[in-house]
Image (cartoon, rainbow, N blue to C red; front, side, top):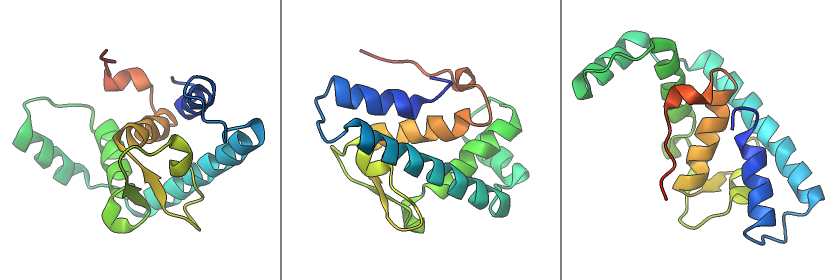
Length: 139
């Protein structure tokens, strides 16, 4: 997952879910869009960094945990970047990952909760180890 969860997800949607539209040429196009999303997030991150103190306060209000702040700030920044109120992302149930991997400069990213979690993990993995998130896969 650390190397590129999005590539794994696209390939498994093609191979095991039978999404025939995800031929090699379409997957290449979506990988380019994924890079566009990463660049757009990087630009957003440089101008919209979440406030450390405010983030600490929010965590203290809901948990006794005191996670490493730079990782939490990154997650808060990803959350703000993908917030539906910004207009970059739109939730749609039962959506394919291919609908999420759009060029954010020209199209709205559309996905369901599974796809958006995958995108969160992908963006997070560009900065820190995915194992930090302590994710569990449930049957």
